[in-house]
Length: 306
Image (cartoon, rainbow, N blue to C red; front, side, top):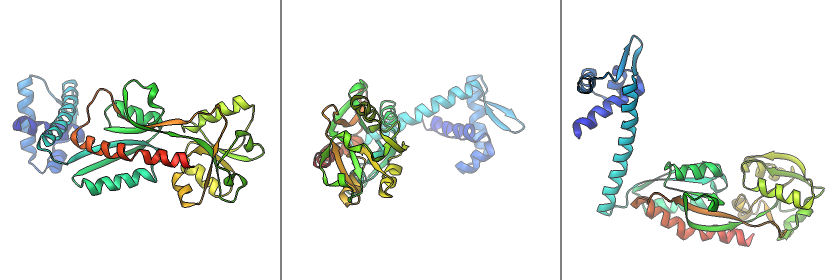
C-alpha cells in the first residue's frame, strides 16, 4: 500500500502538471525518484502511461484510465479515514453543505458559527447554488446534505426536516403595504414591480398568480439575484415580490417590510433539509446534520410571523 500510494501521488502530480520536473518541485522530491516509479509501473503493466513529447508529458489512454482510478482511490481513502475516525468516536472531519441563495445571510451563517464553536475539529465547506444545483450536488455526492425548495418531487432525496415559506410583497417600511400583515395579489396593480426571474423560487408562483387573476404586472426590473432585487427595493425603485426567507435579515433589521400575499390559490413552498437516499452520512456529517435539524424550526418560526 505505501509503495502504491507513493507512485499514485507522483503519477497524479505529473499527469496534472505535464512535467516530471514541475511535479518534483511541487512534491519536494527528486525528479529521478518520480521517473523511476513511473517507469517501473509502466514496465509492470506493459503499457506507457505518458507520451514523452518535446513540450512535456501527456497522458496516454492507459494513463487517463489510471488517473480516473487514482481520483476514485483518493476519494475512497478520504471516506475510509472518516469512517476510521467514526470508530474512534472523534468529533472531527469535514462536512460539505449546499444551500440556496436565500440562505446566504441570516440564520444559516449563525448556525455554522455555532457548529464551529461546538465542534472545532470539524471543518465546513458551503456552496451557495440554485435550487436544482443544490439537488444535484446532494444526489451526486458532491456535498453531505443540502437545503432546497420543493424536494418532494425528487425520489433520490431523503427529507430530514422541513418548514413552509410564503410569498409576499417586499417594500420599504414607509410604503402603504408595509403596515399590512397580508394583502391580495391585486394590491400590486399600478405599482412599479421588481420581480424574480428564473430560477428563483418565486418566479413560477408569480406566473400562476398572473394567470389566475388576469393581472399583468408592471415589471420595471426582473432579476435572478435576490440581493439585486432587495437592493433595488431599498433604493425605492418599486415593490418586490419575494419569499419570506429571501428577506428575513432585512425584515428583522427593520429596513424592509414583508406583506404575505393572501390569495387562496397560492400555496406555501416547502423548504427542506435533505440528504441523498442512497448514502448514509459520515459521523461528522451526522453531527452537523443533527444541529441543523434541531435549528430548522427557526426558519419556519420567521416565516409564520412575517
